[in-house]
Amino acid sequence: MPIALKHPRLVFGSVGAAFCLAFLVTGGCVDEAEHAHVAWMMAVKGWRPLFDFFQHHTRLWWEVVALYYRMGASGPEVLYFARVLALLCLGLGIFAQVFLLDRVAFVVAFLIQVYFFSSFPELLSGRPEMLSIPFLLWGLFFWARRSRNWQVVWDLGAGAFFGLACYSSPRFALCAPLFLFLGGTPRRVAVWFLGAFCPVLAFFYFIPNELDYFLFALEFSSKLQKQGVFEPLSISALLTLPFNSVLFLVFGVFPYFVFRAGLKEHRRNAVAYLLFSVCLFLTTAWLSWPHTYSQNFIPFVISFALLASKLCCQVTKRQPVFFANAIAVFALLIFLNCFWQVGLSLAVKEDLRSQVRFRREILEAIHPDQPVMLSYLFHPIDRLDSSYYGGWLNDGVNRTCEGSKIVANGMKLPPCDYLKVLEETQPVLVDGLVELAMPPESWA
Image (cartoon, rainbow, N blue to C red; front, top):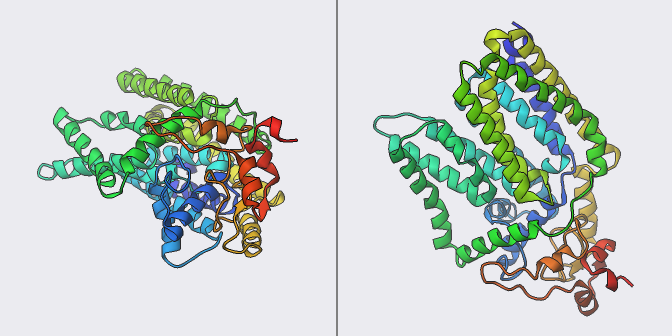
């Protein structure tokens, strides 16, 4: 038997080590600093999102990152803490798949997921979606369990995990059909629904005004997503395009052989998996347009990896050599891609260590009482903003202030005018990119 199937631990260990290195070294994205800054305001200042500062994400990831400050630590090194937390979340999700899938299917699912995350540098960071991944996968594990005496408990647990996944990142609600693929009676589904609502309702009950904020965040985010224009490929995306093209080619040709080998014997499952994957991808793209952020497709990738891995197992019976060789080539390219990301980040000095050091220098140069007007590209994290809206969206001119006009859940946001705030507060540091937060006519 080829080494890719005979020694899956070698494949898993080599690719896993390279991926962990890439995850802990690369620079990530500005969202990571934004979420860390929110955690600081909540833990240190005791502020609440929307009431004391503007935000439109859910709070679960902030509460976890805020543990860094509640343990007495401080500074931009919180980015290290958030990155390790994100990697731990992803690791817990992968560990759950050990129990969900057999050996061959696990290797396939693992490689698909690592490929996706390693191909998009902005995903190698701490963000709310990372917390949803283990919740979803452990929910599926609980759902797959069968017990004569404890079935209700397992189903309630599966629902609770899924509810937490959706609370951390609402787009994970699109993954609900995965539970149906594992089977289940109407009674079990009803218990699962009950379990899913329990943790969410608990948050709404124990956290003041959380229901109003959650509904606001859902409606505001969906409307904000439709504002702006389509983003061109970034330089980093263009540089990784050779690897991505090859990997897409390998993985694009592979499903043909999967269906060729197993479609007749598993027609119903194969067609259902394919239709669900296509519908999930198109739904995600439609909800995301025109800002097709890669993090929006994380639920699709997790779902597709699980379903495709099950189909791939059918190939081993008829075409084991092709399957093993395809897995080996896929693993090798992912391995090289991880080191490409690491080398690229170090070459342009956008690695995580450089970012933390730069933010530390800014932090030490500013008095704690002095506000700043900086985007999250340069924000020191542990300092207050001049504006209620904090750092602005850099993916469009004046997009933050245009978005502030959105009325969501009946709530109207305060006026947004960075130029006025700049003149009135005179922040100690101002980012040159602040022009993106203002209408073009005010640039003069």
